[in-house]
Length: 132
Image (cartoon, helix red, strand yellow):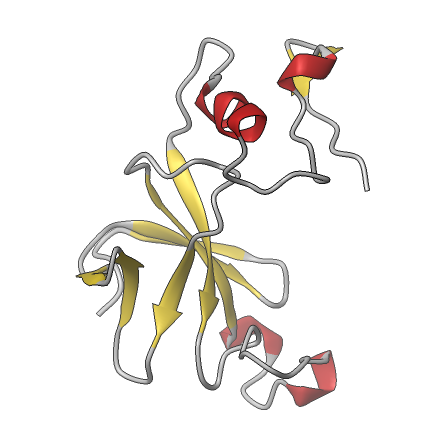
């Protein structure tokens, strides 16, 4: 698998390409993650994982498994950037009641944070009042 990154219409030099053969936290990949190409990302994209989600641990999910319909099924959320590395393995966790991010054992609720929702039907919705 090769990552292709575009910067002002051109391909990035090899020293700026994420190395999938190395751990996300390797010295090279951390440096690539810090490189911003002159812009800061406006949003962090997080997969929504947990029991009952399409990314439920230990099982695969097919379109036919989505009982509420793809237009009602959340895949990922984009929240205003809080500085997560784009290459960092970071997810939003749904525990059946709320959505949160866990960092160093501390849960931070995503309730009330304006966000974009990526749904299983490929649509995107903006929620200005955030999730509840």
